[in-house]
Each structure stands twice: as C-alpha cells, then as structure tokens.
Image (tube, rainbow, N blue to C red; front, side, top):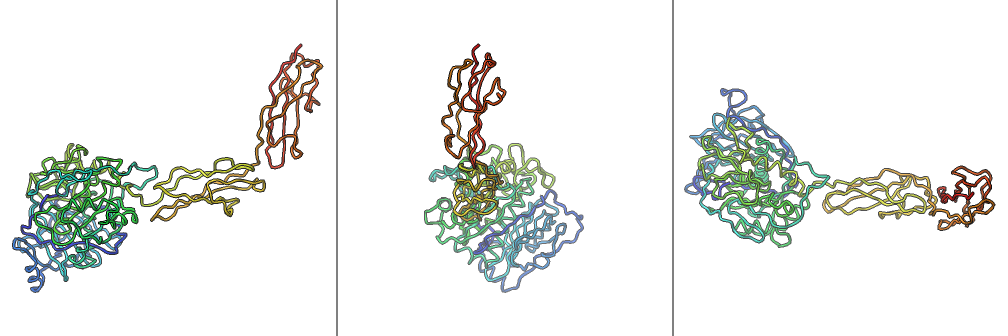
Length: 620
C-alpha cells in the first residue's frame, strides 16, 4: 500500500467500528476475477445502483469536502443490490462522466453480512460490496477510470469518493524501535523475541484465520452509526478474502470480535503499533484482552477521525521472519479507517504482511531483510494493475486489484506474478502457523488407564498432549459411576474393586474456553500380584540325601495363614509323582537327572503366583 495518500481529489468520510460485534464470521468462497467480460455476454443489461442525491445533501457534501477532493452525495438502491446474484451485472455511475460496469462473480450471506464480489466489464479491475443491517459499502478499482469508494456519512446518506492515486512522498527508511526494525508506511515490523510458535499436533485448520479489530473512540462518531462501522469492517474482511480466493490461497479471514479502546491514539502509527502489541502497558490493553477472549490469531487497530494528510496508511508486523516468536510479535496491524483501510486495500495489505507477504522489489519501501525471497508483490505496467502488496512507485496509475501475486493465476488474460514474485506461495506456507497463534477450541489428548489397575495397585491416568495448554481435572469411575473423592491423577484400588470396570474422565480447562472432557476406555480391575523371588534349593544333590526349598522375599509371606503354598518337585522338567512337600529325598533313579522345584502360592484377592528354582544335577 502507498506510503502517503495526499488529499488530491478525494473525500473518504466513512469509518468503521462496532461496539458489540463479537462473532462476525465471513466464510465466503470468493471467485477470482480472471476476465474483464461477464458470463452472459457484453450486451447484458446492468442494474444501476447509484443515483443523484437531494440538493440539501449536495450542500452538506460541499461543506465537508476539501478544495482538492472529488466526491459527491449519492443514493444507493439497496433493494436493487439485494436482488443481485452471481452472474448479474451492476452499473455504478460514480460521477456524471464516469460509469463503471461490474460482473458479479459471487454473492454470500453469513451472520448478518451479505457480500458481493466480481470483476469489471471492458477493463481490468475488481468490485467489492457489503451490506450490514441495511447499510451498504462498496469499493471498485478500475484500470481505466480509477478507484472509488461508496460509503455512508454522518447524518445519513451516502457519498462516492474518488480515491487518489497513492504517492511515495514519505521516506521508507527503517525506523528503530524496541527490539524491532519498523519500515514507514503500512510498513512491517521485523518480529522480535516472544513466545514459541510451533504448530501443535492437534490444531485449527489453516482454512480459517481469526482476526479481532479494536478501534479508537473517535471512530464510531465519524462513521455514521454502528451499522456503518460494521459495514467497513465487513468490507475489509471481504476484500481480503476476495484476494485470497482469487489468488489460490487456501484460507479465509473470520472476524471474531471488536472492541473500542479507551486510550487516545498516539499521533504516530509507530507508537500505536508498539502499544498495541505490548501487554500491560495501560494503553491498548483491551486489544490483548479481546484477543484472549476470542482466540484471535491476529489483531488490528483501526484509527478514527480524518486521515492526516502527509501520513502513511498503516503498519503491520512481517510474519515468518522469527517463527518461534511470531504468535506474540507478528500478529498486529494498525490502519487509518479514513481513505485507507478499504479505499486502497490497506487492511488487506497489512494482513498480508502478518502472513509473510512483502512489497514488490521496485517499491520505495523495499522488502525487509530476513523474509522469504519470493514473497514479493507484482506490478504489470502494460496491464495497468498491481497486486495487493505492491507499491505504486513504478506505476502511479496502476489499479490496486484484489489479488496477491501468483505466477500460476491469470487476471484479465495476464499473469499476476513470477517465480520471484509469489506472495500466494508465501502466504500458503504461513497460514497453518498463523491459524494456530490462538486456537479456537481445546483439542483433547487421548486418555488411557495406566499404572497398575489391580487390587493393592495404583491406577494412573495418562494422556497424550492437549492443546492449547490446559489445566486437567480427573474423575475415576467404577462400572461407570463416579467414585466420590477420586479426583486426582492416581487411584488406589481395594479388594472389593476386583472385577469391576475402571475408567477415568479427564477434563481440560483454560481461560475463555469451554471445558472439554474425555473418558478412557474401561479396563477390568485385576487381582493383586504376589511379589516373588526365585526359590533356592538347599542340600547335597546326591541320591539318598534331602533337598529342601527356601522361599524368601515373597509378599504376602507364604508363612501367613491366609496364604496357601504348594510344591511340586520336577525331574528334567517333569513332575515327580508324590513329591509335593517342601523337602525331597533324592532317589537312585534321579542320578544324572536335573532336579528342581516349582512353588505355587494362593491368597484371596491375589493372582496365583508360581516360581521355579534353578535345576541341579544329581551326582552319579
């Protein structure tokens, strides 16, 4: 996006904001605008959406406009727009000398937002419109006629504004900041240290990236009402999603929450950016809280009031340069709502930076070092268009269209990238990580009963990793019934539990997440096990002598009354008939044979224990 947007012939009065919109989900699948012709032929009749406004509103518009701004009040035929479907054409008479026709490629309605996207007829360009609670907002970028935005104004009604061609008047030199190198303009901040960011084993799908928007207190008043604020938020989301879909990028933005910040913004975008990403500094801490409450992967601050002439439009972190720290340091953007966020795609541009996309090589603010070498915007001078991440430096008249550079995607019959300019590839590589900066739900591990689930033993609840980090609670169950007080990760079993079905329920909880419970597969509680050692033989291994067995180290002890012990002497591994006492007199026929004894112990509640002594060879 441009470094500076001079007030040349432009009025952009519609701002955004929404005090209570906490879960606006835009999951539309956009259709890429790959041609300048509509699907039904060039003679298809277009529906006119704009008409002249009353004289009183014309006077109001003139009183608001600066001398070098070009804008006019209009009436929007919202009913006609509501009837528009994919495949239809619409006509926009933005000024008496300029009428633009668009072919609608897609219409989507979700969660109170209806959106329309498409391409232009007879020229290169893109069209985007949304409707929220009866309020409409539109943006159209035409290579032949320029860029225009239709927005509501305070007091009611609509204006159409010609968005000025961006200027490179501002220096793009790196500005030092704490642990970051920040470029001017919707420039990007190289990500400093923070918290680790590996994609967890159980993770959100990369098809959705959640974003939260916070806004300054001045934004609602200048926006013309809550619905108008919602409409610009929705337009920014829709433009970004339109660019993703058109460019072969496998994700969509979802707006999960908005909140007004109490602190007055700084005059510098750099200062606002640093405060936005700094928790606990007392400035924009509402942003940090909203992020955790809504599990937003990304957070954007929208500034209200008139865009300050000579400033730059936005600022955003460049993701992908420090993957271990990206979740905390590469999630932030700041944009001016007026003349920037949706008028010239600044919001989509800054989100692109978060997703590791960067400028074109010829930009006055060149790509930052340390990023992906192919993450570059694309400018087609003969085609008179440039992609979302490119600057106007090498083509001041080029229309900024809703495409990220991709050499494999054509637009109006012309390629939109090159091998060295492929922001779509960079973003596709990044989205799996970004979609899990904050996970939208708790993903449970697999719970099993481990340890020694038997009488006299201790069962242990084991689980594979959960994500995100959670606090685990436990409840043991016998035959499906919760055992009172059995709420730790281990459980001691008694004799009466033998034969019952044992399972454990594990509940994972974390702030701002619904708790998730998982129950292990049941196991049958077994009997206790004897602790045994190998019996030892005593005596001389010779015919006529007596061999005895010493049983030591067994628990419970064989000498106890409740323990029954049996012996079986063996010759070459086979039972010797009648030799079932603790002692055995060696017989003549045992000469040259190997003698051993097998000891068996039984006790109530215990598994039968059986051990054999070493074999001794009887002398001849």
